[in-house]
Image (cartoon, rainbow, N blue to C red; front, side):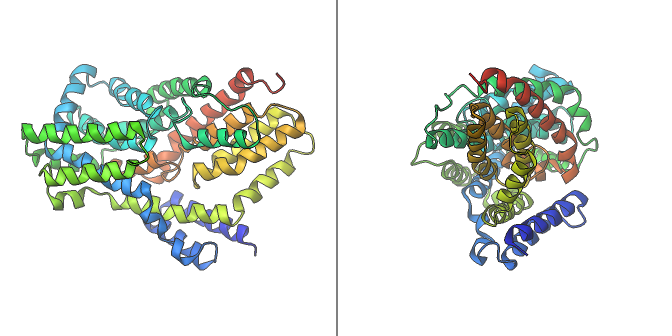
Length: 422
């Protein structure tokens, strides 16, 4: 059995266990990573390497910074203010969650945006007496589609630009992605305000009770409110600057240290604020994603797709097929890896057809970023898993609709903006 087939079989088992939740999600992810090591798909030293990734460190730091907002009472104050402005209507609160996330994630890290806004959204949900699950998933989705607006909004956009540069072809400009990113964002907001919100979990889970306990336990110290708020803003500021000497995860950790040293929360409260299900789920799936990449499983699927399209497919067919396959793979593997895999394939096929590759490449970037349907597809989805009390299928129901929206808009708009035969 080839390594690629082994990787695909392991992925199939993981997908089944994720969907059925026969065993906890984090245990499935850990078992999948261990299986990849035992199958020889990755070195044993890489099985748990994902737990030391910068994204995991970023998550841990932002969990603590976010918890400080609760323990000082600042999140409660912000929540009450937002509810006064937006009212307690579901659509008003949804807009209050999605609009800032969309705008910020266009220029900031999607993960950082979600991590910074999540404690505020949780408090808004509590003050408005709305289940947190109704607001957190729209928040995560907005962070994902907002990243499609600019060149720096999400890694896939940068990767397709690098592929164009390597092929010595004209690159995308900073706002070229807005031609598709803004329509997707508008359609996504409308979708979540109408159909999507009806597909979200209806039960009020324990996450709200936990928030309530934290707000009774908050110190309500004005000075500490200012400290926690300024700490969060400072972290966001450095994330926005994206300085080489201050990576996102380092900024988050420094913010967490400041919150503990200034007694915005105690050391025990800081430890307790970290959602370990989220941490292990994301960290362990790094190994699975690496196995898919290194084993050639992704390339195998791509090659089969090219063979299925025949010797002379139309550019529209190429774009549609690559979009579908990349969007499926990105639900379980890194969107960065998915883009890196399909970008050169898209350029090669387009060149053989004598067509411009730009529409195809942008479709690949959009599809790789359309990881809405699983909790492991993108960090914002993973980040809200524990605090929202979501199950795997909670992502599938509204997520598939978002993927369909991205597909339709990409197929219709991209060839108009970036013609195949200019």
